[in-house]
Image 1 (spheres, rainbow, N blue to C red):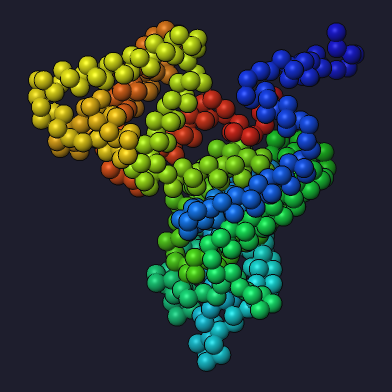
Image 2 (cartoon, one colour; image 1 turned 180 degrees about the vertical axis):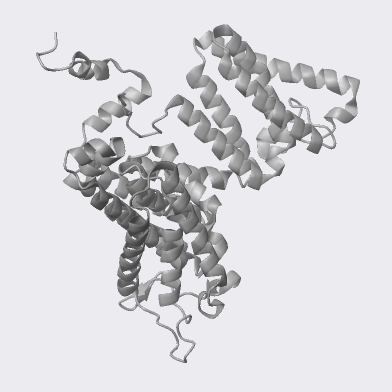
Length: 473
C-alpha cells in the first residue's frame, strides 16, 4: 500500500525501474548512478577524445556541423521546448548572428578606406550575442499578445523579412545575393583557428559551456516559470507568474543562442550567403529538436548529432544503403516478436525477392536489366534480389506511391496480419529505394529524415531523450 497522500503509481516507480530489463533498463540504471554534472563532464571528455581519432577533414567537418546543429537546437529549445512558443522565425536570428560576425570580421564596413572592423573574437562574439538577444526582445514585444498559429505566422513573416533584407538592402554592405566572403577566422591574443579540427574543439567548448548554463537556467525559478507558461499560460498567470516577461526572456535568450551559433557558422565557413538561412535549414533544426526530445537539453544535442550524421550518410550511395537497410533491420528486430516470427519475416522477405526476381526475369529480361543503386557490397548482394528495370524512373515513382499506401495499410493491421504484410512492404520499399530514391540524394535525404522522424514519433512521441508529458483536461 502506498502511504496516505501519495499516488500509488508514483510510489511504485522504483519497483517498475527495477523490473525494467533489456538494454534500455541497463542504460537507465547506469544513468541513475551519476548526476547531471558528471554526465556532462563525461560527454565533454568523450567529445574531446573523439577529436583525436578523426581520420580526415571530411569527418572533422561533419563533427563540427553536428555540434553546430546541437547548439542551434539548444537555442530553439528555450522558446519552443521550455516556454511553448512556436517560433518559426528562429532562422533569422541565426542569420543575424552570421551576418553580424561577417560585418565585424571583414572589409564590409571599410568602404570609406578604413579597411574594415576586423575585431577579435573576444569582442565579436559578445557583441553578436547581446545584439541577437536584443533582436529577440524586439520580436517578443511585437508578438507579446499572440499565441499558437498567430504567433507562428508572425514569426514566419519575420524570417521571410530577414531574407528580403539581406538580399536587397544595401548590397554594397551586405553583399546581396553574392553574400559576404573572405571573413577573418576566429582570432585573439595573436592566435587564430584555421583548421576544421580547431573549429570542432571550439564548438565543443561552446556547447559544453552552453549546456551547463542552460541546465542552471532550467533548474532555476525562471525555468520552472517557463514550463508553467508552456503547460497552461492562464494558470501560470493566476499563480502570479509574469507571463509577458517570461515570453520576452524566452525569445531573447533563444535568439542570443541562435545568433551565437550563426557567428560560429560564419567563422568556420569563411563566408555567408542568404541561401544559408532558408526554411530548409529551419526544418532541420526543428528536426533535431523533435527527434531528440522537445524540452530536453541532452535530447537537443543528441538530435543535432543524429540528424547531421544521417544527412551526411545519405549523400553517399554506400553509407545511405547502410542507413536504409540498417534502420529496417533495427525496426524489425525491436518490433517483431516472438523471435520465431522475426525469423519467419526475414526469411519471407528474402524468399519473396529471389522468387519475384527470377520469375520477372524469366518473363521479361528487360524488366530486371537495371542495376541496384546502392554501392559497395550491399549493392552486389541486393542486385539479384530487387527488381530494377533498365529505365527505372517511372517504375520508381509508382513504387514510391505504392510504398506509402502499404505503410498506411501496415499501420491499420494488427497481429499476424501485420507481420504478413511486413514482407511485401519491405520488399517494395527496397525496390523503390534501389530504383529511384538512392539516385536522388537531395530528395532522398529529406524523405529519409521525414521517415526517421515519423517512426521515432510513433514509437516515442516524446523523442529519444524527452520526458513524457501527462496532460489533464
